[in-house]
Image (cartoon, rainbow, N blue to C red):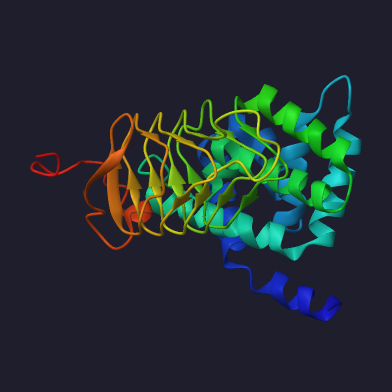
Length: 271
């Protein structure tokens, strides 16, 4: 296994691209040299860089950066999927966000990406039985990023959360692979149920700004939820829903709405 990790480290195109972009960034903007070196160039792997970035963002008088960094290092060492998912998230942001021009940007500047990576560490802690530490990560992520993701939620890879302010994802929510959502999305419950009470979002789903998906309902693969909608019932795959409460107004418009990011509902869908 150690040899496999060594070989993978030598063949890590995402990390190699990030380091190349970091060196170019220092040349172009020397005033950011300290930040770029501390976050990227001082580290030997993407795992170490992510552990550093998360720990510096979440550190407080209650928990030091050093302790948080050791926790993150243990998480990345204990589950290779954390860093693999982070790589997929970086590529997703680069591909789908027109404001992202380099792989470097999500790690340095985008709180949606940073919050998802902090969630991934908290989810590892949750699965390992360190529930209070997981809650601490959730609390600090909410305070630092304005994003509240319960550590018990299950979130896939290739996730892009654009702008990301006021995102709420509940404990029993499930989010599939290659999902895109914008700010102020809620994946919540409908009351005081204590069991499985949150939405199950399929692969390739696009969730528009301000949409609320409530209750233990299923959103089918490659569907599209219009901005401001309130979804209270299951959505079949490859459909577009809109309204309060949301209803089907047409097809998804393409095979992969989460990647094309087209949020325009064509005229005639609501006739």
